[in-house]
Image (tube, rainbow over all chains, first blue to last red; front, top):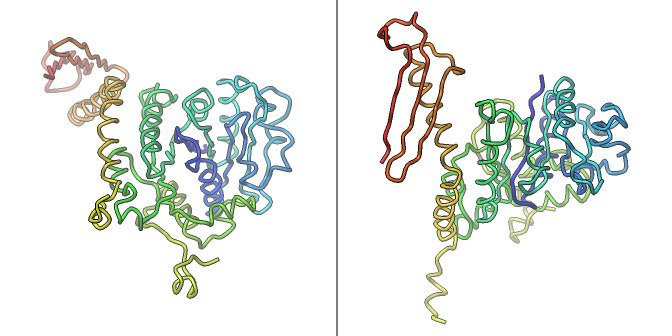
Length: 271
Length: 99
């Protein structure tokens, strides 16, 4: 039976979709069968970040409404067929996704894949609570910045209250993924440190993704960063995070982009 | 603008951390009871479970909130087959009175 992981944050723009794509791809690159599921009804973007926007025919809601079979809506990644995408619908009807519909699709996906990674919409409304509803584990994406940390705290409380596991008195395993981290600024006292964030949120750390040009470059090209440049800082951070999700114990580091000789001399990052 | 400020400008991150800690302590108090109950339930069950076998389904945890004191009531059913439990002690009551 596959494991359901929700990637959530409360706040928008912190890197949920980027992290869903990168973690999903990294798990698949480690040999796992993975599906990434977009829960952002009306504002789907996971298809674009994965580079599959022109291949969407049917979506999540078509499946729940019986218009299409699950196998018709799933898009296999062209680079790695162990990786699949279930796109969200672009309908403006936010209530089109129902709890029963989500449950039946998740139940089927659990039988087909090792990992079901759910990309949550921002906010704490219906879409976000549906994305986390059946989760076994949660990746809380946080930027080292006050509004993001506050919203993460809120979403952690909701994970402990509104998931099926919480209602059964069980626990959703929560992991913190700190993204857009800049060690130099943190050292200068200009940015919350990793220790600050961990102390405030008291949630175990899954990984630290450094601020990097590689993330935008990868999304421009429609490839998860672990495909596009596997040796870049963020890609290595996502690989480590994926392996920690798989239960491996890996020393926590902040991988950075390597500087070329030119970059070292002139203080710019390698192209 | 004091020229010295340029040299001894402190980082803003410690301010961010302090503001967050104060704000979240307040915001968490709103949802506190349910979280606290969950944590207490898990820890008490773990402690009792080390000594006797218990059925997690047969456990009742409740918090009565008062103005000055609150009462935490924990009811755990312990099967009679277990030794070290007095005959009348089919149910164990533990009452804690936090200040």
